[in-house]
Structure formats: C-alpha cells, structure tokens
Length: 80
Image 1 (spheres, one colour):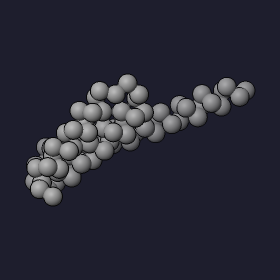
Image 2 (tube, rainbow, N blue to C red; image 1 turned 135 degrees about the vertical axis):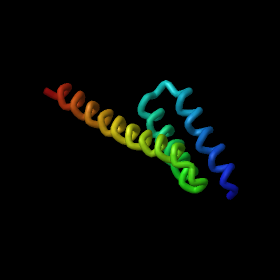
Image 3 (cartoon, rainbow, N blue to C red; image 1 turned 180 degrees about the vertical axis):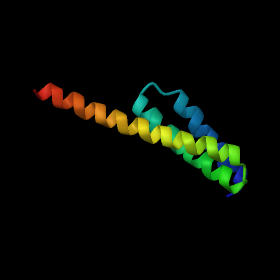
Image 4 (cartoon, rainbow, N blue to C red; image 1 turned 120 degrees about the vertical axis):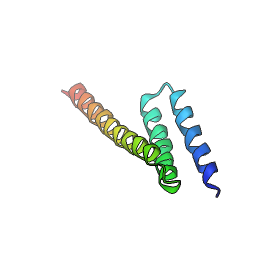
C-alpha cells in the first residue's frame, strides 16, 4: 500500500466522522481515522501530524469511556 493512500483513507474517516449525528459512532470512526493518521505520521516521520493525532486518539478513548460510564450510570438509575 502506498503511504499517501493511508493518509487519504485516514482523512476520509475523519471527515466521515464529522458528518455523523450519533456521538458514539462519531467517536469510534474518528478514533479509527486518528489512529490511521498517527500511523501515517510515524511512517512519514512528521512528528506534528503524529503528535496531534496521537493526542486525539487519547481524547477519543477517554470520551468513549465516559460515554459508556454515563450510560451505565443512567441505566442503573432507571432501575432504582
């Protein structure tokens, strides 16, 4: 696979995530796009590209975790 193609695919996933209304799905698709872009940044040795997307991966993982935690908390409150 040509490296540039990886960058285009990563960009497509990030753009696709920004078009989504479902926040949980948005986070997962954006996580995939940022992960691919971080890998792309490593391959081409572009440290700003890698760093920004690596940070975004962390943010997405944190937000996915908090969404799951909030859902569990809401479900628990509904049973009380």
